[in-house]
Length: 348
Ligand code: SF4
Image 1 (cartoon, helix red, strand yellow):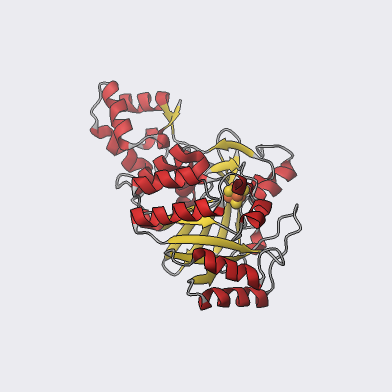
Image 2: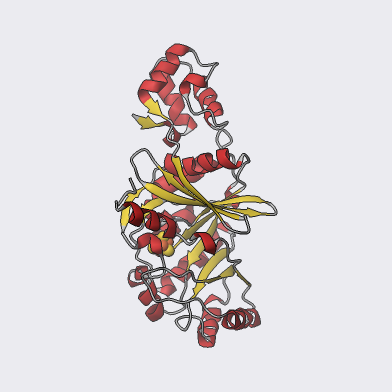
């Protein structure tokens, strides 16, 4: 049986054609699903014979909401979602003045091994399909009762390590038969898989690319992000420039400030020199504590000094508002806690 959410409209039309049914039924079915009708038997303008065929061929893969945690300021909510294979993932919504932004997981776990991240501690369990990623939005929208306006692929998993499913997800979520979220409202965050960045640059998508940089030299970056053993910072910055040339899009660089590791004045100067001449914005993120490591959050004072140095060099930057630290909102921490409590890799 297939998850119907993995299908594009064209693919579903082809299925109907194959069943000797009218292709327009595909759009009718999606109209129901994207209006939160998740039982084929409730699709009242679809003939019963077709509903039977749909029930035999497909399921609508909406995950079960296992737990919901709301931050004390009520602006950040974290959802622990369970798919029907028993895997649990985390999805986070953030409420801004312009609406809701959602941070989606693209894999169950992650194999990239970044030292500051809880998602990677138990490795990667599986790639999420395009429909599973999409279903994170549908499940949450139903709870909050409103549409999500911005999507950030920055939860558990490395999106470019799940390339085909993530690109398919972006195409579906962007389509007018689906959620119609514009590409400029979608941010993809990567630890820097250089050949895949080239591929999305060549597709000339209008999404925002965010690079998890976190260090401005190879030696330091290798210590915290194993991907640096594969691609040097020079290769990464060169491909970012290529991305901007192809798309005219500004790149976001994510820089987690870790006390006395990468938050010194010389680190800020090195970062400024590295990014000079690139069309970019730097997000400075006070690092979240992960149980297994000894990383500590930079002091407020050193964060301000770091930011001021970037300003002096003309590098636009913002210090990210810390959202949801009281609900383990950093990527992977909640799922991990849940798995530890339940004592099972999938959280069943
Ligand atoms: S930061 Fe992202 S790429 Fe790195 S281990 Fe965590 S989820 Fe994976």
